[in-house]
Image (cartoon, rainbow, N blue to C red; front, side, top):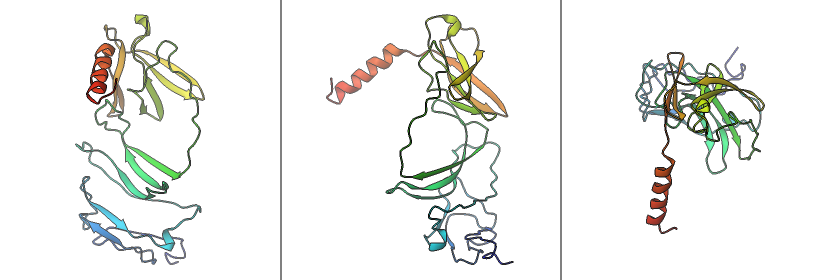
Length: 224
């Protein structure tokens, strides 16, 4: 059975060249990839394939497959494995390799495959409940670990409600995993997955200083 009969529209073994072996002529232009080893430097190397009718899926079902290996410890960030996206129309898809580390967190050792697809539509927000009835602030610590979403809370009136971590259970339900430590810190800040374990750090947030800095920035920008 030929590759065309098998339904392949693109096949790039990356064994010495960037040619398409599906029979559809979707050959890639190489930008810095080591084609002898199929090695991408993680910074600027990539392969670009020109648009073609065979790669226009037009709402049909399609399958992506890739063999990807990374070093155990990296200094950079992860990125797309393959993507086809029109930024102006906001339509397309991407298959990406990611870590669960959030905004205040360092690079975790975990690896996640993420598939995203967009058809230029805006979806409605779906309420997922409130992790803690005592704290409104959770955005610094959303982290995925072992297939579950975890959220750390910041600030509460009573000390027993400080520094709690919650695990999402679906719909609007959250499970309280307990408090991290027993110091005078009021919240969980960075969370990171390292070697299949979830680590959480606690901190205090100086809201007065944050307010003063934002007010100073607004004054410098001519707003009051």
